[in-house]
Image (cartoon, rainbow, N blue to C red; front, side):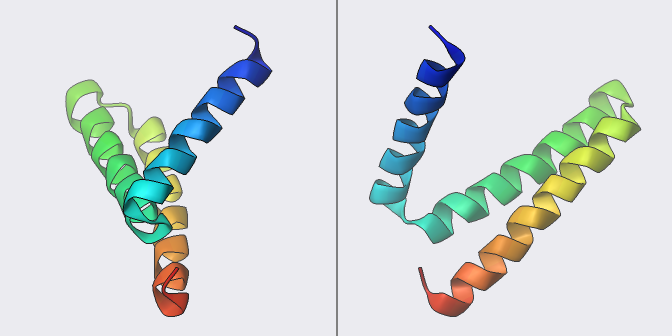
Length: 73
């Protein structure tokens, strides 16, 4: 499978999640996954650099989540 095919497969899966649950819920779930991953990396692996990267990603989704809530998308 090529990188493009993988990307299309992921895109289709994300679209199905959004159709089933809404963009707001999917964004909130991504935020939670990022925070959980950051905590796991810090506690299980003591990888604090990766923890910070995942926390930054979580904050990006937190901002998106807040903006989506305003427009109720």
